[in-house]
Length: 335
Image (cartoon, rainbow, N blue to C red; front, side, top):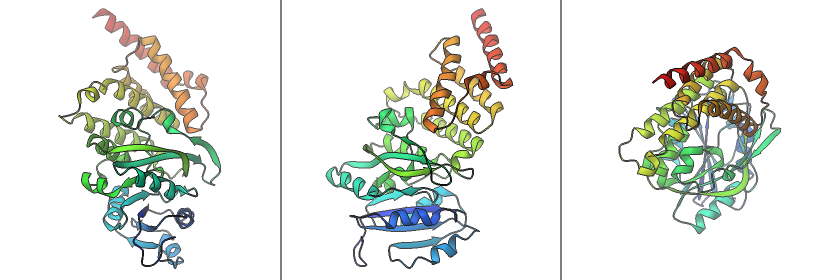
């Protein structure tokens, strides 16, 4: 553990807003880390619940508690980066918690490979009570973690990642224009600038799923991710091989957003995003509709939720969408 005079190697930044139900478990999971020197910086982004009183119960020189006016998670994380003393930065959302050995294992990889800017890892999805839903091993789909992998699959979870601070400072931190997908935008920006990443092929954090979490905000999440992809491809000097990926990336992004909207019970908007995906599909009309269903099943499995293809097919929105595809296909055939 870090001593009073030792400069921390790792700064753990915990942004929080009205998360008094979970914040103690998050902090405790950091204080239980061993074999590394760290500090904990809690950035309270204007909470109105019991967060401040809970933090007052900690008499620990590892922890710095900073309270600011509500500005959003991007600003809170950036404040933490500005306050950090460690050369390595680990983020932990206030409703998540680390597993033992997380910090030391990622720091060890950085120590061996000074060229790295990011060390990523796997995670467990847990419910609001912390009960495990499933393990996520994203390196199985994104083995390289190069720009193409980040762009195509976007396996971004800040709580599972560790960053070299100089890279975060170099690109200017999180961009508050893209909540709640500002983490994806940051990673794409880092990768485009040449930041190298690798995997710690191990589950290191529990990612909590509950009704107040950012990933349950269906429409804001959909619009934000769309804006991130639009912003990325508007850049004038993209590598040619990345530019050639635009159609496939947009297709996969729109299909994922559509599934996510279906999952968060925004079926009307789901239909509209699948219509957008239609214009980027590399498949035939029939294959495209089949692919949508297959993708929905795969995304649901990856998320640990039940998917009923029959229920989807019987929904008014899906039936309307299929009629639309038949109509559009007919018009295309006449051109």
